[in-house]
Every structure is written in C-alpha cells, then in structure tokens.
Image (cartoon, rainbow, N blue to C red; front, side, top):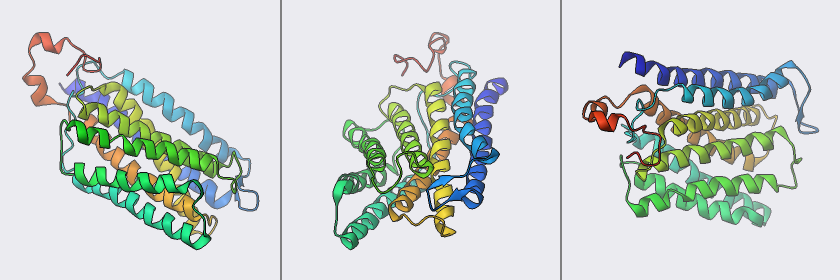
Length: 282
C-alpha cells in the first residue's frame, strides 16, 4: 500500500512544482518583459522558458498519471470539505456576471457577452447546489454540471473573437488555455459523479487544468494590480480562473493524496483485477 501511494503523490507534487514555477516565471515576465504598447512579451530566456513550461506540464501530467498503478486511484471521488472550494468558484462566477453587466452598461454594449453572463449565473447555481454534496450526483444535478463546461468554451470563444486585443496576444492565449484547463477539470470530475470514472485520465487532465488555469490567472491579476494591464474583462476572467484553479487543485489533492483504502479493502480479488480507469469500472 505504501508503494501504491507513492506514484499518485509524486504526480501531485510534480504538478504543484511545475505550477508554482510557471506562475513565478510568467509573473516575472509580466513585470519585467511585457510591452503594454504592443501587448506582447519581449523576447528573452524567461519568456521562452515560460512558454516551454506549458508543454512540459502536459507531458509531465501524462507521464506521471500513466505511472500510477491500475486500481490504486478510487472509482468514487470523495471530496471532503468541498463546500468552501465549490462556493468560492460559484461566487466568482456570480461576481463575473455582475461585473460584466456593469461594464456592458457603462460601455452601452452587450456584444457576445450576453451568453457568458447567462451561463455564468447558471454555472454559479451548480456550484452552490453541489457544494454540500459528494459521491455520485443525480441526473439533473449532473446535467447542470455541464453548464460550467459550456461557459468555459463560450469564454474561450469570446476571448478569441475579441477585436480589441491582438489575436495571438500572450494574455489572450493564457486565458484561453486556462478556460480549456477548467473544462478538463470539470469533465474529469463529472465522470466520477456520473459513475463512469477514468481515474488516471482524470489525474492527468486535472493536473493540466490546474497548471493552465493558475498560469492564466495570477500573472493577469498581478499585471492589473501593477497597472500594466487595464482590461476589465480580462480581470474578471482571471478571477474566475483563479477560483477554478484552486477548486481543481483541491479536487486533485483529494484524488491523489488519499487512496481509497477502505474501498480497496472491501474489494474482492476478482474486482481488484478490473482497472478503475476503464469505462466498465464502477
């Protein structure tokens, strides 16, 4: 059992180390290498390393997750004390909706932002309802859980079509990667809630999601606080990314740091032969 605990915890620690390193590098780039006049980072070793870490994080997540022995991770996701993390994400989505509504009123425009606002309200409702629940969800609650995924896709599309920011702006790309990372976290968790888990795939997806969401959020928040950036919508998105990334980090910690010892102890030898990351595993 001690050996089986090691590989999930290594996966978690590698994710934490790469995420911390990535946030530090990108934040330093924001403070020292970002040219606000053109909206890009100046070329340099730190900028190159920051970009390379995205690839390293994806590769590391896939490799570390594949090294976890089959049957080690639980088929049921038990997220103890989940309520604060869920409520925090739900509150950030509600605040996003209010903030965007005020910006639209101030600028006398709605454009494509109506859809993220509506989806933001419904997404926050999901987290407020599910915050006190654990294990498998009802079909209705699980269906509601797909709305935050749609919000992530809509936010990525809105950011992509923003005509006031350069198409390949590093701020834009960082936010888009963060939204996709949040979607990976949500889809991975929902498979557990639906009783169709893929635990090792979930470990990889959540690791990637934590890295991309926090790397997309914290440098933007820091840049806004330092008056380097002044885009209000990007600030609102960064707040949601930060709360979603913290939620993902909490969920990943619960998945990888606490093996399902009680579940494994109650398994029959035949059940133990079934990998928990196959579609037929319950």
